[in-house]
Image (cartoon, rainbow, N blue to C red):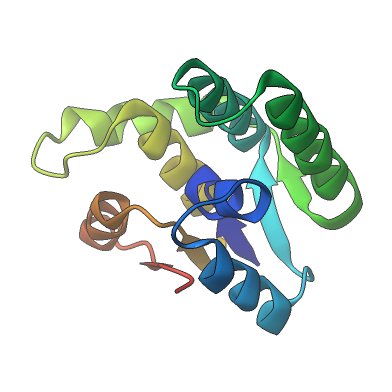
Length: 142
């Protein structure tokens, strides 16, 4: 099972420099055995709101992207609901300042670890480095 953080999904729905490469990765891997979490959906909605505030998207475009993301999640992804253990593990990882995680990334990583996924995919190099420090396989899809 491959866990996708939000940064991998945003370029699927809105124009980003990595959009073509991310779409090619999805085309090559298909949607089988891909997982996200309910936290991913929350972060995705937040990313769309930030793009609206920054005038990068119209509100109608953001709403459409969120609807499409929800549909993709329901039809194609395994969706994990964060548990108390996920939050505890994320909190523990945040206390290790040398790892350098942010709260949302720590939660993604904790979910991936607790669900024993094969790899966490992200566009965030900081999260990849932190994952490796914590013995979790992580990579970029491009």
